[in-house]
Image 1: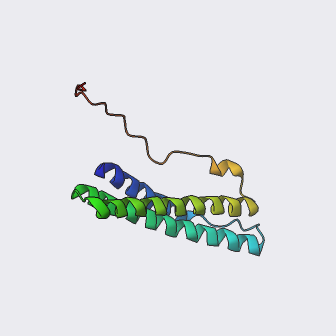
Image 2 (image 1 turned 135 degrees about the vertical axis):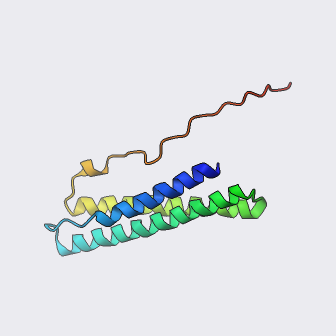
Length: 125
């Protein structure tokens, strides 16, 4: 589980860094460009926070944290994920208003799902 949290941390960091290359369209009105830039900055920050949260969860899992410490690490990830979802919605709305084509926002999975591992233990009745 810690490996998955580390993979999520790395994906968030890559997502945040990839946003550094995006600029608002020059043809957009000043207010649209400002909204685009604000949404972009919000997303960069959200991905940074989400990546850090996944890193803390990975550490909690690595050291075998129990109870409140483990729950708080998990809750931080959940909260950061909500913030990241909100930023994505705001960013897409601002980008569309600034005239960027919606084809740029087609969903893609940043992390390949881990294969399901089935237990080989026999259940006891």
